[in-house]
Structure formats: C-alpha cells, structure tokens
Image (cartoon, rainbow, N blue to C red; front, side, top):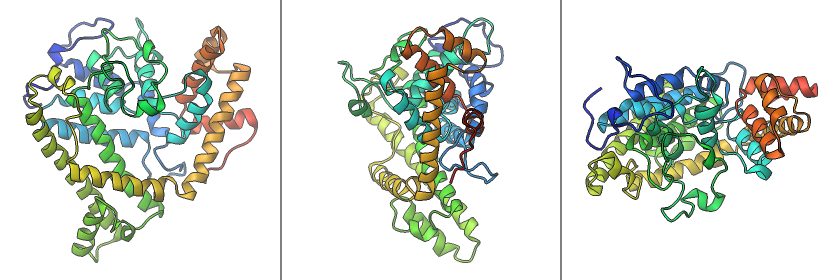
Length: 397
C-alpha cells in the first residue's frame, strides 16, 4: 500500500478493540478486520441473498456478495488515489450489507413492518448486531471484535445519525432514530453526531456507483430496458450515445459492457477530483478534522450529483417498480411476514435460536430474536422454511 495522507485513518493510532488481542507480525489492525469479515458466516450468506432480481435459476444476476465485492474494489481504488487506508475502506465496504435480509429491500421492508411495534428494523443497525453480537466464531467473546474505526464506518458511512444537539440527522428526521443504538458494544463512544472517516465515506459512495452501473447491467440483461431507453437519462444517456455512435456494429452485450465500464470510470474519476478539492477547501489535516468537517467530503461534483439523482429516479420507476419485479417483491414480503408471525406464535426456532427464544422474557425480546434469525436467512433457506412450515412453495415472478 502506498503512503497515506495525514488525514487518512492510521492503523497504529486505532482506538482498538473491545477485547484486546496480541499484535500481528504481518497484518495491520484494519487488515485483521477485513480478514475477520471475509471469514464470517454472515459474509458467506451474502452469496444467496437477493440484490434486486429474484432469480434462483442460475441466471447471472448480481447477489449481495457479488455487489459487495464490486463495492469493495471501487472503494479500494478510490482510497488508493486519495492516499487513504485501503484496508479500512475495504473492511467497511465488505461489511456494509451484512445486516441485509433475504429478498433484498423487499425483505427489509417486511421485517421493518413486522417489527414496528418493537422498534422497527434497520439493516445498518443489524450489520452492527452481526459484527458485535451475533457472529459466534470466537471462544472468548461474541461478535468479530472489530476495531472502533471499522465499527464507526459501518454505523456512519452514510453520515451522522444526530446533530450535536441530539436532533435526528438527514433521513432520520423523517424516519426517527433506529432502535438498538444503545446496545452496540464498542471500546469507546461511536460519536453519533460526527462524520465517519474518509475511508467509510469512500465505501458509501462506492455503493452508489455500483448500484447505478450494475443495476443498469442487470436490468438490460433481464430485458426490462434497452440501451436506447437510456439515451435521455441523466448521467447514463451521454455515455450510451457515445458507445452507440462509436461501436454501432458490435454485439449489444459488448455495447452494454462498454457503457457500464465508462459509467463506473467517469463516476470514480469525478469523485476523486471533487474530493481532492473538498479536502483543500475544508483545510483538513487529520482524521479528526474529517470527523468535525460538518459535511461529507467524499462526494460527486454538483453536476454529476444532480445527474446521478436523475439516473436513480429512472431506475426506480423503470426497474425497481417494474411489474415483473413487483410480483416477486409482493410474494417475498408476504413470505417474510408469515414466517415472522409463525415464529412469534410458536417460538419454534432451530438450534441456538430456540434457546434464545425460550429465554426471551418479553415480546420485544422475543421479536428481536425472531428478527435476528430471519434477517440472517438466505433466500433459499427462507423458502425452504416456508415450504416446511406451511406446505407451500412460493413461485417468484
């Protein structure tokens, strides 16, 4: 790894872990975090969790694992260009989706609705529960025992949760603060009102870039849209026009990949250029300056940010709400809701979850056990349990 800038996170200056570990002769603190995440059960499960398209027939649509790996690669590339700690950026990127339910955002919406009387469900808080409590790979403690900086990055990669005076920040003004913020074990206060490190901010914007480029790719593969449909769409349109003009006779699949490649490259280059300017304007020198900067510093330029919003609006209307997608969305939401109701009524959970359910002394405690169990399911396992319990097998799409 190249030398890092003064404002990068420094492994040797980490606040450390809740449970002390001996030094490693070959790995930095953040490299150890990355390795712990990759070897976790929750990480492996991502390969069988839906990203956008509900297909279990071998088609090459992205799942949560492939999406996570793509986000990780982009985050690491941008971190290197900005002279940040690549390993911390990678660790946050690899862990950012560990709290996602089966069936993508549809499963999350259903679980949030089911958990509404008990504080709701938030996939970001669930990721924190996974890495601090639910993973049980170590003899001496629960969780992965990650560094403070990685935990901070997972929790706040999209920005603070509150203002310094305690008022909810950004989307939490509308949604309210998620339940579970007071139940996150860490070696020090995670400082909900400060911004996260530049490494965490890099992971967050890499997530946006990956969504935009790869959801277009999958939507084209699924036949929901065509390349000409994109010609008037912000951000993607000019690139599509370039590719069709320069390569009119190549196979459509190659045209699609060329559009995707250029979209990713231009987005990343814009972020790197804009962030470099932001760092100078904010006069940041240390990682602490970044946390107290009062704004996100890793960002798109204003023109690209506006275009990116337009692209997202197109994808929402034409892809995420396409009827062929919504059929599966509705079926998966009903499946999750029915599973939740059954486990709440019967406490009939397998393995270690059965003991936790029986030990629950209140409905909210039981609901959290059930929520943890369902959130950890893969798509195939959720379908299998549904078929076993209700003697019916849903057919998606």
